[in-house]
Image 1 (cartoon, rainbow, N blue to C red):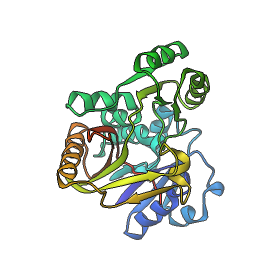
Image 2 (cartoon, rainbow, N blue to C red; image 1 turned 120 degrees about the vertical axis):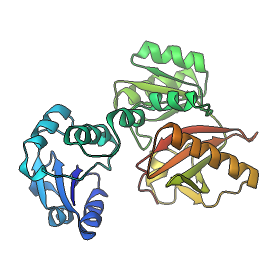
Image 3 (tube, rainbow, N blue to C red; image 1 turned 30 degrees about the horizontal axis):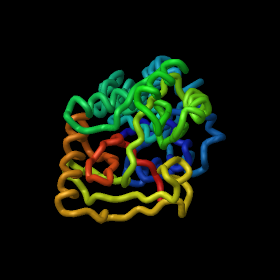
Length: 287
């Protein structure tokens, strides 16, 4: 089976996915904007072929280049395990006639506001939220939502560019940081409480976990720095609370038209209300 793998050399965990696919018998074809010499040795050793493109973010050019690449004939799967490339992978599936997440579905995950709107429409409680494309719109949304408020890029993953803004004086720096990563910013009301996560595998909910960061917020540093967060499985919940958050996770999984596996993240308030934060189809490689 041929697997087209986008960005096989970056981020740092990608070579291990390439190795895993190769070891189970897949012919892995890499596509990236790094020269072959810059790929990690593990990646180079496991790839059956590699196509260098000028930029992975020029989606039309990448699709055209792969259409013309003889090695890509009869590709069975298109994979990108790096969040920024999820939409490109979906465009390639549609162009090559390969099954998997389509563009409409991918956009719901790359754009956090679209995801929240889908969850809202399914009757799943989410933090109050708004999207903004200008500084003035961010200020207006923040004043409407109130403080504290979360400000983050709309299409980034791993909480990159995220800020918890507790008062208006902190907002200008948060706006600058968010727009540094994206041309659209999402704001959501901060929900105090416990951070819970529910894995879904084959449509069934897995045991509920609780994430306890050393900081007030489970941010990029806490996610990727050893010792900055504790993960407790199963979470210390009542049977009723466990059943309810698993029910909501499965509902979100269905509303977003997911398949295979996903991780659905929640906040549980001190009063016991659950707020769905987001769904992740490519759960991060954290400890």
